[in-house]
Length: 143
Image (cartoon, rainbow, N blue to C red):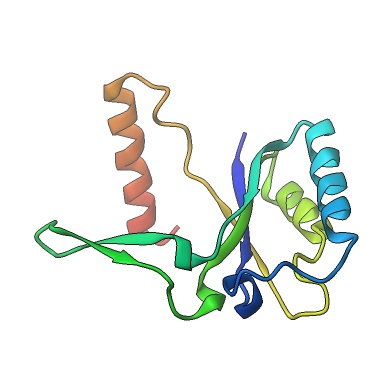
């Protein structure tokens, strides 16, 4: 079954480490995630600390890593949390996403939903390599 990641996009206030001023938010989020768990679609989910607490590893074209400490600019390009679901279809993922509680009540905000590639790590190495090659070919075709 396809898996999807619901990404809660960060806001300037989440990047500042401010929790939304809505006493019902945690209760609503927990109830929604509990509903997904009871429906058997919830795999994982968590909020993320501000990017000031994180780091990036950037690679040169030659593959040399450089560590860059946060914070990172453009809060709208960052993720403040995620929920991982496994559903039967894109339409089912969309249905759950439409019901996702607003993560930052009183503020403009967004969630982004993206499918994950299939399971390759649970396969023998030859099968994993075949699946990865197929996925890369699909990406190159624009699909």
